[in-house]
Length: 373
Image (cartoon, rainbow, N blue to C red; front, side, top):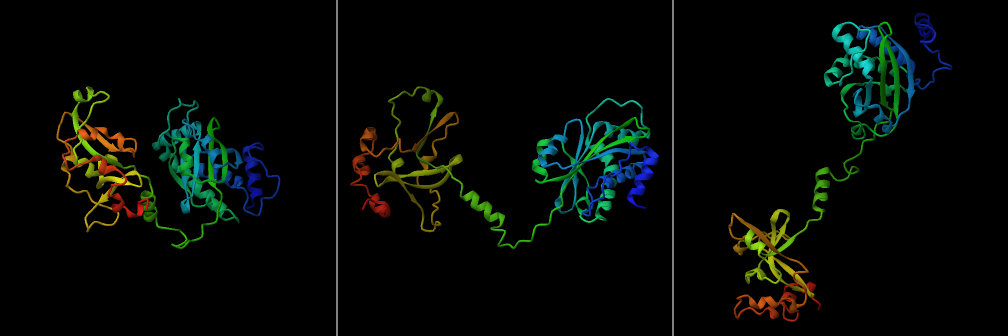
């Protein structure tokens, strides 16, 4: 029996206003799916859900992904539709239609009065899958029989969508085949709207070789992590002071720093993770730290030694840490900014002017590649 004959019979049964006759022939590409969805929706409600239903209208839409967000509202029942090749669509039941279908399925009857609205849950969605899945299967099979209609094939009901802001993270960009059906159930008093959106057909992506895909994701992840910037602190000395002592500090007070702090510097990362150790000096007029390490250490990474146990500070459970870190502001090039160093009990073996003056520093020997000569 032809489609026109089906429509003529439906018009005689439900009246001229219930079934619209198409104004022109169905395109050879398989049609837009409105007639197939209208017919299969009525069959699914009757045969698979056991309820008499009439599809009053079936509107064709061409929504984009951003248009689908407006369909998801707190009062509606919104669900994903899962298809083959990872394709995802959307189904939205209006609260009036969902409550009528649930009432029929759970009580076997439809009351004349619409019950008070309530929040629809995943349990309600599981019950309505008895209608959604057969409808999708029937519609997909009807469209697959027509040229270019494979876009509707292979879908079934998935999980709930609670927040429309999740849709751009779940659904694919691009155009969708959208349909809005208005159904009347039973004697026509109860009913509501059902919205479907299925992604437009697209050719599968061509298989790419391992070389074309670029670096494997572990290598890409490693490169991204190792390429991130990491701040380091050059710590000369760390001591513990009580909260009372810290509160008594005033401008001009001196904190004694032992001589070993100048020859043993720690490079620490976030969380005080020791990256390397070295000694303080000078290169090309700038303060510098020469990293030290054993002969067996890997190039570019010197493990922390235990040569300077005082760097760990003293155990004081009620004290606070005070870290003196090397900075260009703390250690300017001019040696005149270090007048307090003579107050340290360094002994006759330590001369601060000789240790930090450019003309006498041994960093020209330690860093020949960085020297002025």
